[in-house]
Image (cartoon, rainbow, N blue to C red; front, side, top):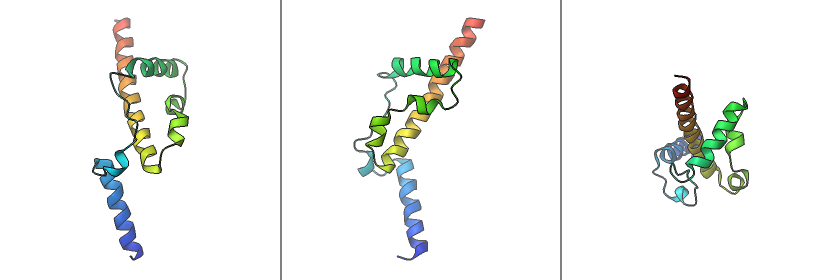
Length: 101
């Protein structure tokens, strides 16, 4: 393959991973279940926000598990965690507003 073809192929693979079409790399990926881990993660999110943490994802990530993943799996795990953090942060802010009012 030429350089341009390789780049095109790699871009298509990345696009497929983002769309969830790459089923091979989805195996053994830990996703954060909204119901199951919600309470523990929510408490961690509250602590990071209240403590003024500048890098909350670094506090929330399971480093041992993260290091055991392939590059593609790491990306999926990281973005899943970032999305979950955003949801829980919004929940915490709504609850805080309710307490004020």
